[in-house]
Length: 293
DNA sequence: CGGCATACCTGCAAGC
DNA sequence: TGCTTGCAGGTATGCC
Image (cartoon, rainbow, N blue to C red; front, side):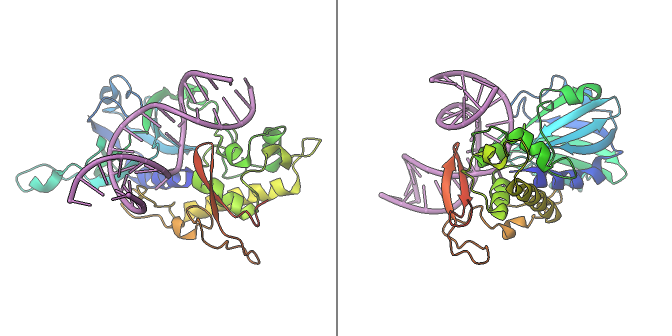
């Protein structure tokens, strides 16, 4: 599912239910997701209080009161939902039709009351790890991540340094989490469309001989920042799996200009081109060959 | 090292 | 209807 805007939407849904809450019980229904879950996972979480729910790139970071951090990645199909944790009793038989692929359930009790936070992941490309907070930045999952596309982290000068000499196409360079962390297939296609840049153009062509950004790299930076901000504002894009933690759909998919629009007219004013689908490094790219150069 | 293909796993839609 | 094929928002790994 999820690129940065979807993960940020999940974070915003989890925070009110989890921050300040105690983990009373962990239900772990299988030993692994994409990778084995941490050893003694339940024992290490039960009884802990959650200090905060943060995000880095496409990772959720759940900080615990003993200094540990639960790192969670949703892969392609992972989702969290928050449900009322109704007490089990004679009159509550309806509690549990357990949805397929609900792998982990956090029973937490905090400012928002007793809730279940359920992790569901049909394809099991997601994964969870536990890190010591003091070494979070050097954790193997974190240490190679590049700039956040939000705030002031992403800027043309820094991007130029990373693009200089690169022969990889822009599509691949923007998907590279070591350069900008958090973009995925949808938002790379959308940002390139907005910047009218071809996904096939070599990344190094946006850097001049002195290693400084050319004007079109500035345009790309603005496009990335704007599309990510707009998608967060919309609660992300709901294609197959992504929902907000309360079950609501995101609606940025209605604002796609390129992604999954093969054969449709390009929406740029004055362009009579048609969106085309190509495959780059094994993944679909959608763009307008007429105006994206 | 850079660039690319492949593997991981399940579900769904399209085509025959 | 039922089967096969291809495709899906991501990352790690291995090969040239």
